[in-house]
Image 1: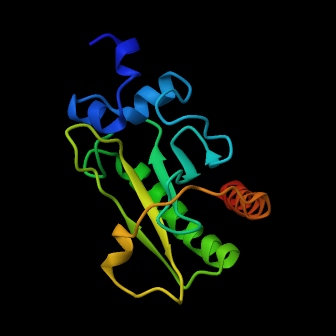
Image 2 (image 1 turned 30 degrees about the vertical axis):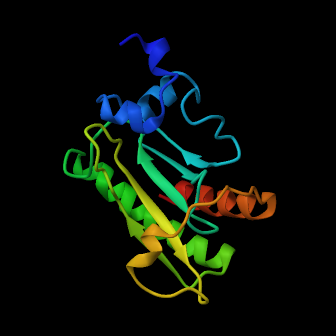
Length: 162
């Protein structure tokens, strides 16, 4: 299918056709998911870290590989190690900045074409513990400049110290 026509399809439709929506989005500067300026926290040659546009909780983030891999089993060890190290640091930062009780880490690469990523989903003390937090209703992302800048500053300091 012609790439221009692909850009008119939803991420689910692209995945079902075997086209990675994340890779297509990056190739066409946000044509699939839109402008991520107020979402992206950190990026380097290996990973991209951003707040989720349709979060399950305030502070919901994701870390994805820059290069396409379907999931952790296909990625090189150095990349998996880096993603886990950054996930750990983000968990600490999210708890500090957003005041949540815990941050759950999950990965779900379940379609015929998915892009390797992990999600960090905060759980607050007023919420029930357990797996229901992975399927909480999604909501619109609300940009909070103060929290965004604090998270960005803390993760950049961490990245420089590595």
